[in-house]
Length: 549
Ligand code: NG1
Ligand code: ZN
Image 1 (cartoon, helix red, strand yellow):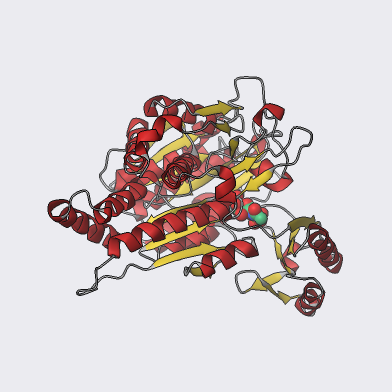
Image 2 (cartoon, protein in one colour; image 1 turned 90 degrees about the vertical axis):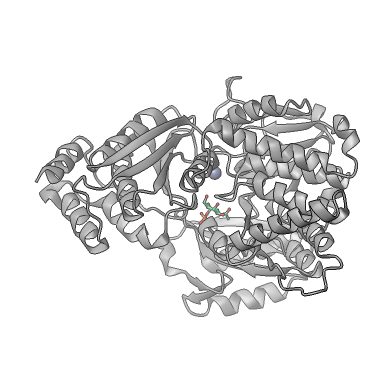
């Protein structure tokens, strides 16, 4: 019939490259941009089917390869909530990306799956896919291929939102499906409005013109461009954007959050003049953020203030506001909001100790935002971060309605009280933080607002606890799938014997902790080690790597 031949005709224009194997992995499909046209076309089809499956809810399709080199590209799909594509659809997504062109296998695969899922795509139902891309030069033509995929499904429409950060697209998908205003201007207005609100509610709000300078490394990518727009809307002068891609720098080359966090050195464009200044780095699609400080003009070293420290800052602030709000609230205590923090095994042990000492509930999941997000959503307030700076805060519907009711009650009974201010602050946080997915721009404004509220410098924030020295290594192996882990990746179950050996070696080092796991984005086994001194951490990592080789 018509739909089938439409699919066939379109697919023929995007042949599958030979000898490639595509895997959706932890962060979507990624590869050299030159081989991605068929993947993009097919991702367009999948996004359309996903929208049909959700009764026409808007689905997101983001063309980006995040922190990868500029010649790479990739694609991620966002579900109606604005979060990552459901893991249940990953096997189908992988199968579609790899289906051979011959014998109509792709068409067959899609028809079978649609039938099994009860998706009808005869044009009688509407589907919508919202699309965005980062600043990579390959983005435009790859996005066109994805559009063709959407158009190959009858009843489905693609809306091209142009160049966006990945979190902006996720935010728009979420907003659209909640019936809220969802343009880029609305995104900026929501961030700017809630940021101003937090500043105005700060104890020292009269001193807002004295906020000290922040210099942001934009990774020569989309985040820089968008941050410049946001700064205009905020009408503030304390933020300076560097590495905005206009000065000849290359995306992610010697710059950006991944580089700064993994290499722990000063990014390009920064140097002696920035000693002691508060600095931050975004990654290539602006979903990761880390802060740093340059301690001296003579070396390349930095003091890294990573995702764990952002998590700790957010948790501390939210916990404080919550306890002010609940003060004296003993009468019926009908609602006790549950606050939880989610980390992975890569979280610095000192951060976990700090959080637990502060009375917080800490849970661990495997690496990958999809796991952390899912876990955080189980709480009234769930805060999650990967050490590399990817994370956010989630507020449950039930908590937000309680908060709103509480805040209305307070504004009529005790306007201007500490309790009312705490309620307003929590509401502002829920609007400032991007609840669809980790977002460097919204995270940055929240950090800035909290530091201002506390009256803290970056050093004071960094002093919340002292990171244990840690070390990461990669080991190339023949078959990384030979390593199977459990316990949020902290225990190896296969091959046998390795975990026992890791235990024995780790126990020899003061505060020694180490684990290995297969990477989900590279063909390597990752080794992580931490211990009481830098030499110990290095030594432990090296010994563990030798066990793996
Ligand atoms: P893998 O390659 O699976 O370790 C890396 C990061 C993850 C996550 C994904 C997706 C580390 C150790 N791992 O995954 O946290 O961000 O990339 O970008 O940083
Ligand atoms: Zn990213």
